[in-house]
Amino acid sequence: MVIAVAAGKGGTGKTMVAVNLALALHRRGLGAQLLDADVEEPNAHLFLKPAWEEREEVLLPVPTIDPELCDLCGECARACLYAALAVTPQRVLVFEELCHGCGGCSLSCPAGAVGEKARSIGSIESGLTAESLRVARGVLEIGEPKASPVISRLKRRLDPASVNMIDCGPGTGCAVMTAVRGADVCLMVTEPTPFGLHDLEMALDMAAELGVPPLVVINKDRAEPPEGEPLRDFCRRRGLEVALSIPFDPEIARLCSRGSNLVDAFPEWQKRFVGLYRRAALIAGGEAA
Ligand code: SF4
Ligand code: SF4
Image (tube, rainbow, N blue to C red):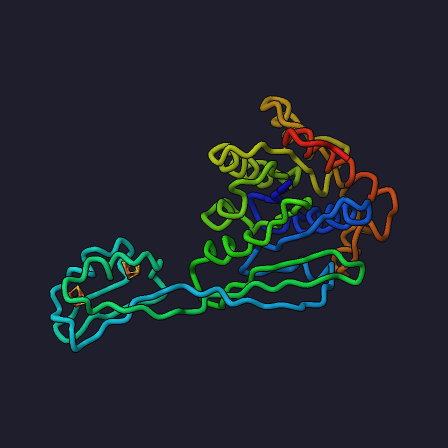
């Protein structure tokens, strides 16, 4: 089973939800693992403290041009959909950061002047926590604009025998869509604020486009209106289930800022996160534990 944990914006607590859910299920003996797909700024390891034991580079093929064979005809630049090539009177320029490694330029070159080299755009790391929970993360090279290939590579580590939590990045762009695509259910972590509601709507549109059923988790929740009511009204109108509410509590905020976990500090949260999994499994059409 694959549970994506997403949010329309950063700072909503999605990593906290993904981490505590993974810990709760692992301790319950459900064979969980966590994949941190927030590749620009992975931070689940700060809470789980795994010992990294393996690292794999993510390489993307980019073209090389043989000046001996190239007659500067310009076919390759015309074939490139990503404006990654420019033909000057002297030579062909390759803008490697724009290249998607599609190979179109090589196919279009009548002179056979286009070769290939591998360029590192990031890495995948994997390890175990002290209690043997498997954690893997994608790390994008600084300044590298394309996160999706790193996330796709990370997702090769999905384990069909486990409950896989994917901690997605913020927003609803390409990178998050790559992370959420194919998940059985998407937990939408939101806050009871106007910004939270706006970003939740965008995240729901994304999940709908991908055909992934959503389940709402409200973080920093307040029992008293007006903060919570517009969000809950919205959920009611859209027929969305609020599967978990995490209260606005300075003690929880302090815990998180110290890199501690709810399920360690408050035993009742172990049960609550297992309950969240059960709802997710039901929504996904799988079997609850
Ligand atoms: S298509 Fe081939 S020959 Fe033409 S400019 Fe590009 S690399 Fe040179
Ligand atoms: S591999 Fe594709 S994206 Fe990269 S330069 Fe060639 S045509 Fe453009």
